[in-house]
Length: 516
Image 1 (cartoon, rainbow, N blue to C red):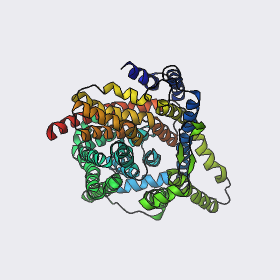
Image 2: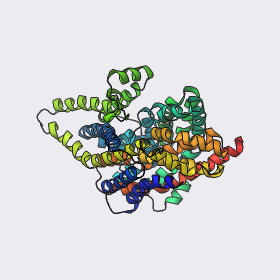
Image 3: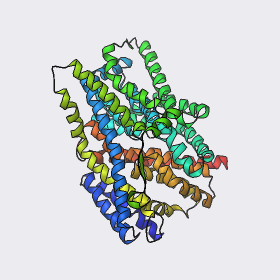
């Protein structure tokens, strides 16, 4: 048990510094990395070669994410040059003058669709600039975009957290059983997500009264996404759950706005090409991401070009990357096409040759260093099982804190463990890969039903993305926010996350009581 507390110490250092110190996140991450290296060398007896190999892999993975951020920033700059911010405001004003509808459409339904087709921090990169364009402040845009993705992430990137993250560890049958519980419980938890989005984005002085007055809309909007997701899961499988949920939600909420506008005699839904064209880059990106997630196309692209570095420094730590299936490929392709279009359209203005690239690069500099540091931290923890002390890796050791607990503690703790994995790695898939086997083992030891504990893990890993550092840094870069903004996001999202995780754990206990 002592070794478990030692293993979790670097994470505690990172959490305390990130949430409560006045240092910027880069400094906090470096200090936490120093603590990790000290424990790794003196307790786990990790060799310098393993540390260097882990650091190298961390840099490689960071460069993948940096490529996504940079390419998304390029598309954002092009979106602005095409008049996208003004167009977004006009379109959403025409769909509905009601800010509730506009915010929920983007931060809830659109985010669900984007999570389904891409995931890995991409959705806020598209949603944040649209929210800013319709009048939401940059920091609030980041916060509610992250919260809006806390449910659909469970089936993000064409079902990857379930079909790869969980099924790879516990088997497809058990993973699908857990997923069926997740998609059902999401119907119950969705109103909490929508209510939180509207509460944070509210412009009213008495926010609680506004929530009471909008209970019907909150429930309607939550069901507009969660019910199509439920149906899609049972008819089409986990790969299309969030995709169909997002599309269904956008159509149903837009129909609601259309009917509401008719009743209020408001003219609506008259768009011109000038309104729609600035969104062409994002529309094409969404299409490309959808197409490249089709099974056979995805397999072809994945194998067509692979950057493979086996056994880095002879340690057995491998790195592999398929650039053509990365979201950055779609963003870069669209950016190049529209960059050329702008050069032709405004051939007398040569500023386009450098302005778009410079603006994107300047927003990337600050988060890039923090991303590299945190991913080195993550990879050293992942690979700490390669040691001379005969100890399991630090993440597994830390999770064993809960291994001897009873059924109630296991069910209440399971979502928090899932969220911890997502906080560290910035990925529900990675969290499921890391902790699903531990959750399964603790379920068996405590007499809990495995699928329910795994469902708690899956829901926690999805919700944990609201405080995942690289997702926050990427979204802040898109919003153009600077130093210390990440702390504001963490402090805003943490209360929601805790409430959500406790509520999820209680639902797990209720489901256990009903089934057993």
